[in-house]
Length: 246
Image 1 (cartoon, rainbow, N blue to C red):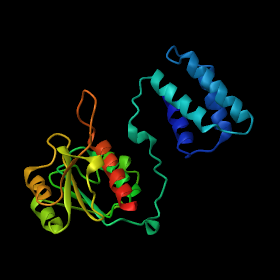
Image 2 (image 1 turned 90 degrees about the vertical axis):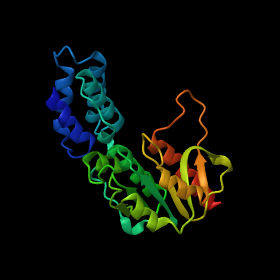
Image 3 (image 1 turned 30 degrees about the horizontal axis):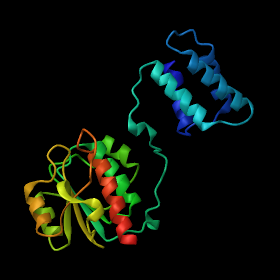
Image 4 (image 1 turned 135 degrees about the vertical axis):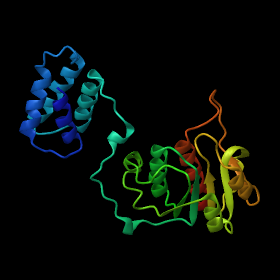
């Protein structure tokens, strides 16, 4: 059955289009005597088979079947499994705003990749990564970035090297204890500093922000009191771009 799952994945990622083969896979699931294959999974296979017999492939039903099978067999599903690796980006069509972001000692490859993807979507002009940090070419970075490590220019360097590159621009930090985002005046161009998952923004970069535009914070109302860094980055970027486009 694990081979069936791998083959269904190839259909899900559009790497295979042999409909007769898909029919056989559905029948294998429906007729399976494996105790781990739940009735709900077999019903989903029947629904997909009905679609195929009507000359159509419902991507939602196919995705449901694949998910249920993986759940039945306790196969972990990572966020990066949803990435379309065949999707090529046309970098020549990318426009940018005159804004950049410093990722200060960020350790998580997944978070860095997610931030690259968000940076592309919000037309960021440049990312700066202070070392030590996760590698941009790490497999998990590349998967969560969905190709955007190729579309968003970036520079890696020591904190001192990055400071030399950005020190003459308007600078602010995304950090706890700052001015609430709804009342913060975002610059039309400049640099935002985002700290590491564990420690936040380092003292030397935080001082740079305090000597410029200061610190901006996202108001939080739950028990945790913090957000995943890539989620916080997305919220800040949306607000920054919205302010620029007004």
